[in-house]
Image (cartoon, rainbow, N blue to C red; front, side, top):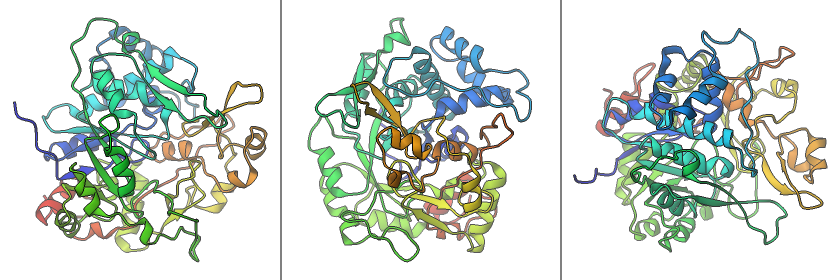
Length: 473
């Protein structure tokens, strides 16, 4: 059987479950690459099960997990028939950490399996899963779970995914594998997080198909670095410009801000696509290319195609809470939507696109009223405590707590809790015991010309056909 041709269009991985299985499946059915976001799938699975799993989709996927007793344990912990009472807080999930936690690995693997399984269901198109290098502590269990479901592609950005090719090779053979974890203050000590597939799938198993790896980069220098060796070489690149949604790379050199307080990018931040093409690997351009003209420009410089995010984030199959999605769509269509590239919002230190929508965390009053806490912890980072033990800190946690852990008050200023805000954006925000409900944080690309020519309340298929054929489906 011949290998499938690479897609021309990649639907970007967005948010916490904005790129969910429904969106990825809809795109894959058009013959292009549908991508699920792999960020925080453990908590989205747990919370949807606690809401009663409307439609039974997650339970259908869990019934196909290759080790039934693991799926049964997950259902036993989190499934609530009929759903929890309105306003009742969600049950927490195990937090990420370097210390082994079997229940945590099971939940992460099962959640990634379920999302990819549902995205692949009912068609023979291509499905990928997008991960963040910044969320290293979840990567091994998440990747193995996605591979068990037959993911065709793994996409990874927000860092340098140099160890992922080896991870994929080992997991395809069901062999134990690990990646290096960045630990502040660790000097030359190497810390790792890994997974032994036998702990999740103890029965003899056939080798898994190895997914292709696409590294998401913002410079030809990083692309060349990864391509230099078979051990680090991906199967292709997604090259993002600063206007792409979500996180973007900071400007090279000293950070300078414009009058609106947004990072200034210059010639040093422009990608030399000719040098990327010389590497001999397929690449896709992202960030402002989601139109027929954008695709033509990408193909003209040797790209295989483009990655598109925001047009899909606003389509009917998007994972956004539907009321919030419609507000974003109306304001974008009217030309009144402001998306700010905030250099301070994200705890990661990367600039982060924040859509300015009243009632969300983009509104200063809403942000100020939110109790500052870090209870999900996907973006917290390990550090060496006095005495040598490992601790965890996040610039979005209470400032005095962060400073006590060795951080600085300046570094914590203005940080937003992306974990809770992005989870609320898909309608799964936490209800606190005191009645407080987490507000949403919305992210989108800064270029919205893709809406020209799309019908009102468009579908994923409309986006694909508009870009590839110049007309809606």
